[in-house]
Image (spheres, rainbow, N blue to C red):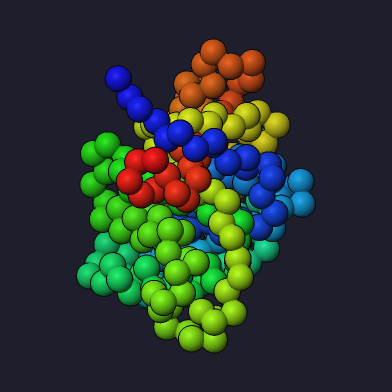
Length: 247
């Protein structure tokens, strides 16, 4: 028997400002571009924060790091325009490299306290068999930053930001999850999601993008089975209190 949280599932559509925290430049969109595009169209402010520099996945190995970074930014800005992203933030930690988890958590605390979102999206760090440490560290650091945002004794590195934080986070949504409690209907945004994903040309060749879009189509239909819509995105949406002690 699975015992879920006794807290109500927060309402995504009540959000007004969402900070989406991703390990790599395309994760928010692969995992949740459909629902995020719909929320943006409804007037929600959407901000993206990318933890790693994402350089390891660039397919053109002849590019310098500077040129590769420019290609990644180009892709991400084009995709963000289609989704309706208001601001892009890059932390620049080394992709698949060595960095300190607590440094990431500190930086996320600082941006959460500066931006004051009422909802946070990120990848599920507890995904079964997740082998990429960037994903595990990013998702876990985001979850802890959500929990600790209001405890300003935990420093973010910017005392002024800490002192003026008055925000309140109503919920956190994990994509890339095998334990969803929300299946978002993205049928109306499915064509947009395909176009968004196809912006990511620095890390996928044309055949790779075709395979990715095909896989996302199959997955979106799979998670929508039994629903009255065709395409869905699976999310685990939790109240921040549910992140500690299993309440």
